[in-house]
Amino acid sequence: MKSAVETLEPTKVKLTVEVDYDELKPSIDHAYEHIAEQVNVPGFRKGKVPPRIIEQRVGWGAVIEHAVNDGLSGFYRDALGETDLRPLAQPEVDVTEVPAKAGEGQLKFTAEVEVRPEIELPELSDVELTVDSTEVTDEDVTERLDALRERFGTLVGVDRPAVEGDYVVIDLKAVIGDEEVDSVSGVSYQIGSGNMLEGLDEALTGLSADETTTFKAPLAGGDHEGQDADVTVTATSVKQRDLPEVDDDFAQLASEFDTLEELKDDLKTQVAGIKTSNQAVTARDALMEKLLETVEVPVPSGVVEAEVHRHLESESRLEDDAHRAEVTEDATKAIKNQILLDTLAEKLKVQVSQGELVEYLVSASQQYGMEPSEFIKTLEQGGQIPAMVGEVARSKALAVALRQIEVKDSDGNVVDLSEFIGSDEADEAQAALSDAVAQAQEAADAEGPEGTEAETSEPAKA
Image (cartoon, rainbow, N blue to C red):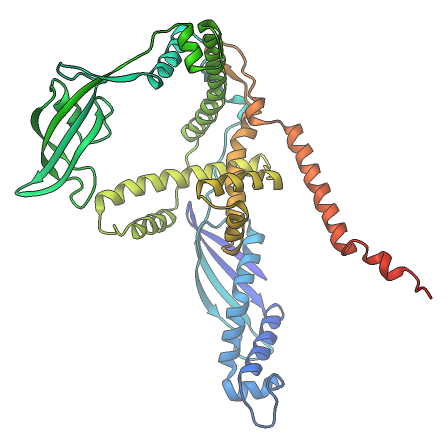
């Protein structure tokens, strides 16, 4: 088989493949066998019809069409392997030549396909990353302490205009023209949270109990989403959250500690742990941002368009041009990131162990609310396991890359991220363990059920 590649765009190629008759012959033989099972020829049993009789009855064209359809995907895969192309979408295939008769000729076809572009990554040893220090300040502890006090605070009614942070029980009605399109009653809302209607915080600020005001706002959901409505809101009550005093009694109420100092020490430890974890997250994000700044990543437009169409179709919003623009931007960014991370994983020779894959699948199953075994079975049936391996490899690629980079904090200290990014030695040990388990399983499968050999080899007793 011969194959040649013509680059049409940075992300699109034309693959021309020529298959000799001898290489196509197994598919032709299979075509004869399959057609022989389908046709009824007097004097011959099904499946026993000779090739020359099949050609007389159904024609060489039907035979070669069946053979090409049967073998084309395999020849395409072989050509991809020979040319090291990494397709990102299904190809557009055009068969340009087939054998004219049995015994001679060749199959020739072209395949235009969008592929992962070749990009040049910078030397990781030249990358410099800086993250925040893990030093815990008094303000950090006070912030955690105040959050804890909020949990144990109590709401108390006040006879004054509402201010930011107050909790207001409201009745609300939205009208467009003469039509009431939405209403709620007796809903508690904290001023400043901004999780209802645009302009509601401003409208409620300064409002006392039993007072009403109106304002205009775009609706956030429903059939009239995005349309401006006249909104009437009434504050039926105004409450403030009274926080408990910060003392030993509060420490005993809110924790397992007897004194406030013990509680503060524990909060300090918690903050330090969070800041240390955040260093790893910040370093990963900073590395990704640095790579994207350094490397020009061409994005295949066809892949983006297909993803956008799939997304909009699932939402029944194919005609929503504004939403299409948002989805296109998100899809372009996601595909660019995927291309970059796949290239990084390949450069670093990232391997995904069985344990890493299982851990990822178990975590993913929880997000979908499924049992891990059921989730994995569904993925296997849909042929999605390789895609999951790719996801794990991309995530791991950043961690492996960080091992080659000196990360410093804002004070100039070198940061040890090994707790979060692992080590090459640990990966090698995990790979060795996975290989040993696989070999043991293969040996067990070869031996058969436990005790079988002993039972079959034991001499018969009288």
